[in-house]
Image (cartoon, rainbow, N blue to C red):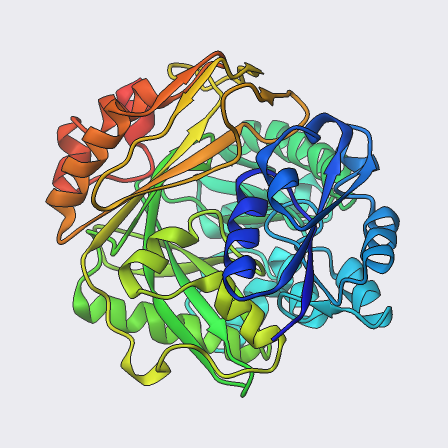
Length: 445
């Protein structure tokens, strides 16, 4: 097992990684920005190094500072968490070139999946279903229009290098395509340094379902079930659950088989997620993207399968066999995750501030992965995620009931918080029925 680990992230995911590493006897090193000096993850690591000011470009995305911290503390491995440098192939290569272990998929896999057009083409060649769309970037608006007319309106205009729900827009006709193409291209260039745009079929009613995969040290790729991620605002997830209430046993087999093929196509190692769109009326599903990292929503898979995915990431990176039988994976019960964000529960606008009181719920089947506590400050410099509330039950009905109680028992005073939205959602008939899609939040508002 890896002896020492630098966690190149912050907040709840840094605490989550540190918790498992400590259980395994791995020494942990946290890196933090000046704005995060008082957060729990800094205190809970065995050692902590300040890597710069609040601006993430000067701290959490500062690869030179992070590598210097790893060398000065004697770290032998780096875990990037999610976001920041987690899907930066150049950084992964630099880590390995410096003789350190990268706890994640290889740089080549990150590169192959980082460009959405390239990823689509690779998946199609591997026999994974992909939605109708461009096989090359739409070089200009005329090319985009030609593609859209071939596919049929409405279409999704997407940044080829985007992710996390960013750099996406819907065009319903030629006029809106002109507008959205220019917007997405400019946004993609500004945010990702790559203005490439693809055009893809848009599904007015669709569900977002993803599969957790794990590439083992022996070369095998296994799938640990699916997660439903259709409760979203602005194409960004708010709630995840496993198993998906929309997926039958037969459909699950097809989902998991396709996800394994996707991983095998790029020689995948470590944890990753194959994201798909599911047409609930036809049962067709299409590859959306592969996230070459640990997902925010990984805890629901952990609870349903009884597997610590961070431990498995460390085992793969150490060249060890998994701590479970890959041939005997069985899903049991139901888990739901709610992303507790510092944001207005109506319009979902960020609402940072000092945490005057933070009281986490407890009880059977309740887990909280948090990044904050009473007296800390949610600053405007980073993602608004404060914590993840995860509940587990013998079935979906029990999980929903436990989620209601946990939401009622979660107290956050100070920053704006979306807990009232979850209280509303958990009483919503569409959500309770399981027959919801990605438009559920818009219909509630």
